[in-house]
Length: 142
Image (tube, rainbow, N blue to C red; front, side):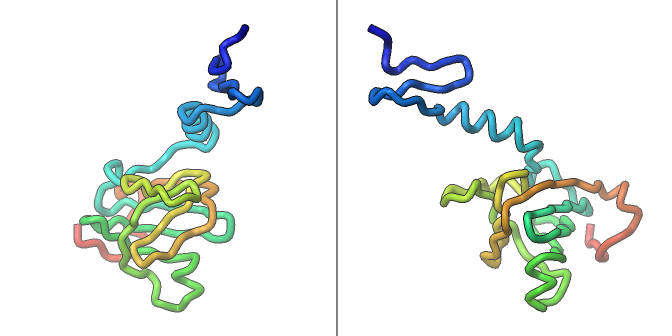
């Protein structure tokens, strides 16, 4: 008799009911390797710019420090609330209620701003370091 809880090399576990299911560890590993790099808040310095391309929009986030960003593009342009808008970033989700507060963006994730604006699924994230930006963007206090 075979073990109904066996796991194969790709992290797929056989269910007791006879079907197969991926383990949580395998799902996370696959999502991170397929999607691309995740940008964490701790990797950013004052003056860096993060470009986030979602399914429907492009956002530009200038890091101001103290978890504050000058954000333009996407909802902030369409809503007419003034661009760039000064907001915080709550973090990112994979579409559920669990939020990663340490993350600014990653492919496959949804970015949530401090004003509760939630983006569509992120397609791509790029960091432009302050020394590479050559003075483009808002006047920065750092």
